[in-house]
Length: 429
Ligand code: CMC
Image 1 (cartoon, protein in one colour):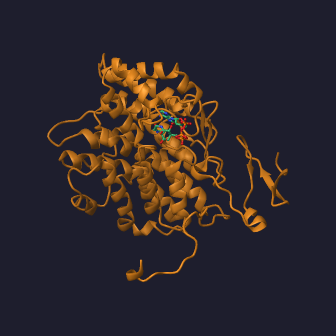
Image 2 (cartoon, helix red, strand yellow):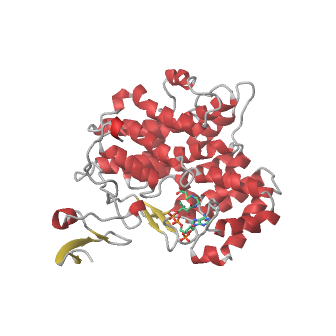
Image 3 (spheres, helix red, strand yellow):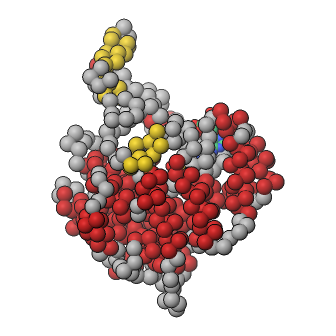
């Protein structure tokens, strides 16, 4: 309850610590004065029991499988809204009215082009560079191209930087793709909606007319909604930590993208598809289930398990439906990877190892199959995740910058290295 305290006994001394209560979800014990009062830190590697900030943006109930953006269930947003509406909601806190939505769409659309010199900047990357390497580099490079929106103390510049990143991320992601396949960059077309424009920038070529498939565009837009924010995950925490030092927003989002790239986080969709390809056929599943359960084998079922969800990831349910829609639209009747995925899910969900550890499919389990069917190579999957998560990173960064109690993030440690010792000259070591 709000206003109540908890007590901790350390070395015979009792320390009172306030309990703070949110609107929903677990309360927190405020340990901010613990070190001053006891000379001790708390120890929580991986932050499994630590709330690093107060936030009003996204709420997850991992036991119930609930995900809310600003209080709205993800299922309703994915069913009824579009990605730019979700962007507005995450940034502004409320769903837009029709005129606010039209104005927001217009403003984002007018920022879709990138500085022409960025095209030359891209030429510095090797052709076979991973698109995420190109993304991390080019997002960071935006601070070199858009100096006029790097002053974080100016609310107008913060807003301009936010719009620029939401608008330009599809352009950069499409350029990263085109660069690796050796095709010319396709300029944005502002008469198209956000996601259709992205599909066109990825798949159109100057030699042919390209018509966006509305079913695929809607499906990808929904995938973007599902990825838009996820509370204080590793990449978002990275953005907040980077931003807490006052670094410019482009640098902070580049840091978030770098963190997202790891296979335990945003890289899992790529890893999940590679795993399904490696398993190859339903007959091989038992072997891989056994490997996943073997403590001496580092193999894990990619796309399974989550730090917060101890129930079916609500995004995975919507994703699974979207997978079927996309495969139907493309006339893919028998996708062997889908067969493997469905059977793998069925076996894992009835296996005591996965039941006891509450390991369920997460969003990445089905997203790879869907994106592959749409024509994206596996190396682009995490770049698409970064594109969609950009708005979440920005909303969280903005919330932090605008919080008057914000201070630089500075965790402490339990030191277990050598105690103080004398330097020995090189000849006496
Ligand atoms: N396959 C087999 N065993 C697993 C798996 C898995 N995918 N995930 C967790 N476990 C086991 C793990 O070995 C451990 O067992 P024990 O208690 O006997 O040591 C137990 O379950 C708890 O795992 P943990 O690693 O302590 O849990 P965590 O919260 O630190 O890790 C995770 C969460 C997502 C990193 C992990 O489940 C994992 O590596 N999953 C595969 C990668 C993946 O799909 N990541 C995408 C996450 S969703 C997208 C996103 O938000 O980025």
